[in-house]
Length: 279
Image (cartoon, rainbow, N blue to C red; front, side, top):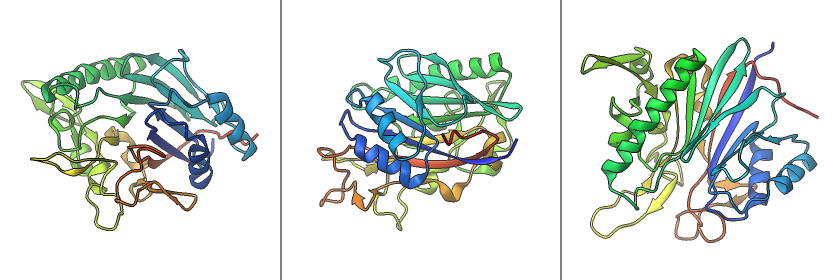
C-alpha cells in the first residue's frame, strides 16, 4: 500500500456555528482527519454536504451523536471508533499492517477546578490510554485536543501523567524509571510553536488575569509516542490564524471569540499507509 501524507486538524470551536470556516480550512489545508470539540451547534450533516460540494468525501465516526468530540475523515474505512467517554474518544487507525491509536480529548476547564484536580484527571486518563495500548498490542498512539494545560504544566510533563517531553531524542529512549516503574514517553512538538516570534499568534488560547498571566496559552496540543516521530513532519505543524484570507484574530490581536472561537486550530501531518476517499 502506498504511503500518503495524512493531514489532521483539531479545533475547539467554542460552540459557535462556524461551518463555513471549517469547510474553508479543510479545503485550504487538504485535511483528511478533522477533530472538533465544543461543537454542539455544528450540523454534521450540513458540514459533510458542504465538504462534498468541495470534492471532499467525509464521514463522521462516532458511537453517540451527543459525544463531546466529533471526528470526521475521508479515509477508506480505515478509522473506527473504539471508545467514547466523558473527556475523550479513542479511535483505531489501520496504518498498513500496523495499528495506530488516536486519542482525542477535551479535558475539564482549568478555570473551574484546582490545578491539582486537572493533574489527577490527566493521570487517570493516561492509565486508560495505556490499558487500550496493551489491549490493542501497540505503542503507536497520538493524543490531540484541548488539554487545558500548557506543555510545561505538571500534568503534561509528570512521569505519572502524560510524561511528554520537548526533545525527540529523549522521547526515543522510550521510557524512564520512576519509583521502580517504567513510564513511557510521549514527544510534544508544541514547544516549538509556543511563543514563536514569527507567528502572529503566540499560542492557541488567550486569557488575561490581573496579577499573573502568560496571556497566550498553548492548551491545544498534539503529542505522540516515540515510534511515530519519524512519521511526523515537524515543519507542517502549525497554529492556524488565517482561513481563506480571513483572520481568526481580532483587532486586539487575540482570538475572535464572538465571531469565530476563543481557540485557534492546529494542523499537523503524518506519513501513513492510509487510503483516501476521493469519491
